[in-house]
Image (cartoon, rainbow, N blue to C red; front, side, top):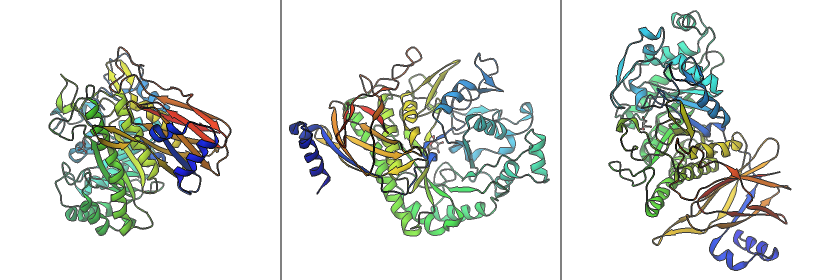
Length: 516
Ligand code: AHR
């Protein structure tokens, strides 16, 4: 019996209106037949030396009237701890391949200054360096993920950075860390070997980069208690040849993961990306088509990886993703400051559903870029801060971190605009260690509520609760005047109906349900 027939009979049995099924009804089946875990590292974040992400975001002026530890802002730390961010990638991005770690240690006033050539030509004073970053990660309770400089650095420089951070020996470089105030090794395991080596990281061919990777990786040493997870610079979007060459040339034991970068650009035109706050339904639709491309990218890159690594030793690490719009009018174009709407929240929920459903291969990811840059979780204005709609999605989705993946089968109605269609509903599900089942649903349709009839095979449950993020308009945002316009509220649109779960998903909403 097909899934659709099952749902039809379930609806007939429960007396629900059949005519409603034809138009605005989806059917969903969830099973617990899986041994896979959704890695918490899928929920990672990225913070580059770019605009007001680090400086003015995490790391603020001593005179700013907010609670701080050294110069780390504690209100943003508390907000990020609340959503349990599992890792933080740093220092770039493109900045990583012009960053020289020795410039960022020792007495602050003696640190050299440099020009941030990628991002606005600002003067980087190196006051936020290795120790400050690792202190931040310790406050956040998250794992650091350091991207090492391959493009303009040397093997020696990267190798010594790892030794500086992780070695407990009496070597000169390990002693230097101790002199600089950290007697114990930091034990950082996530290391990126370059960033976008096909572009700002050195404009390399995949053949050349694979040789470089092997050279650098050979001198990226494990120190006690810190076995490295080396992550190769992976493809740009749909550059499948890059993945093929890297997977062919680099043995799987040498790399923990290969990265993938893909941004959702609303118009698809990098010259005019589209506004973050003002867009038509047509543009929203096209944006969602581009967002859903992540499904195709992950599927196709994974298939190439399967050819060389059928046992899936190597992770696909989507360590830059999110919506990239035009900057807010009047702001520095090099600072990538953009507002964040309900649309962006639905981009986040949809993308996280894709990652959850591909957790066999996608075992880490990082949204770009945490505070004040691109698709942020937090925006700050001097001593004020606000949580973006995207933040609330990460809050709802934290229940999936390290939970058992539950396979889903969905038949969704289409969301149709000007005769073009995309699936209105997307979903992922998991079961936590206490046995609670969490189902995350997104309805991309701007106009229609959709009723979803769900069968849960071999899953016992008695009660359903949930949370929802939605708003009157898809362009709605949180502002410093109205910082709480979009926030999570309790969701009452899900009911137990016999063994079935029936959910009425409001238009343009994201919901996470808890079944216990
Ligand atoms: O996230 C902004 C930039 O996008 C990063 O620096 C780079 O890696 C990518 O091109």
